[in-house]
Amino acid sequence: MKANLIRQKLFFFVSIGVIVAIYLFLFRHHPIYPDEVTNQYLSSSSSVYQGYKVWLIESCHTLKVKVHWIIILISNLYQFPYKFIENSQDFRFFHLFLGVSLFLQIFYLLYKYSPAPVVGVLILIWPIGYINSFVIIRPEFYVLLSLCSLIFYLRSNNTIIMLVVVLVLYTLSLNAHAKAIYFAPLYALAIIRSNSFSRTSATIGLAATLYLMAVTIIYALFYSRLAISCEYEYINEILKKYQISPFLLISDPLEFLKNVIYANNIPQIDRAISQLMLRNNYDIGYLPNLVGFPYLTTIVNFIYFSLITKYLLCCLRMFQPNVLVLIYLCTSSAIFLLNANKAAYDMFFYINLFVLSPLFNFNENK
Image (cartoon, rainbow, N blue to C red):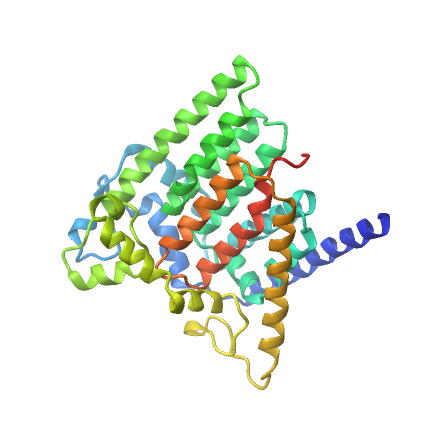
């Protein structure tokens, strides 16, 4: 038993060393992609002009949305670190710092609480393209940071400082991406669950929950207005290819069902799964092509999906249903089903959600 523990610790330290080395290499050689700059611009207060959110598609006048003052305040908070960035190297270094911090948090959580920590780590580091994804900061990155802070909060002594960290990161994740809204019930339930032991903690929990509900409603209304159709049909068709609006379930349930079925038919699921695989050719060449290794991709993909299967079986064996983990699984599934694109960066997000899922099973000892 002791020997296994030593081997496990050695594996984790070696893995961290390898990942940090890869990060440093990517930091020196990795370009800055236009969508990285675009994402940071759209989430910052720089995209707000005279109280209106200015979309990048100037011809769509209906995508100009009045912005609540709270969103402007949060956008300024989100933008604050970027005020100290003067060149492309600083930009990449800041993202390197965020990437390493997220990876170390996930490593630690898996090591402490996962039913199969080594397998979980291998799932994250096996496809080299995912290391690439930790360097290229996507908006979903902040959602993962926020979820990690929530797990730390629930697994810790539920301190007020940690609760503030959770609320701040959740707010920043809302500002970064609309997907964070889906996790609002999970955060609300987790905060209520952790602050029901005394009158003082219940008061703190109620105040935190009210803040969470208020900021979520403000952003939900903002994103719903931002989703108003553009006056140009060809732009509408492009926008619809990325995400199915949940509001469509209310306005046109039949159309909503048709879109969900189309976004999750066999060809689309096959395409999504292919994003997890090592391939000879990648979309838009975001990774170099593999030439001269005809059997390498088959072997690597077989090992990778064996790891995913083993992790899933370990999770199922330890699974004891509770409300938190069920809400988390339902939310993650809804985000996947409503995603009409399922690009490589989406699958990076989903595979992280999958690896973190057993950490919300609180029937195990803390």
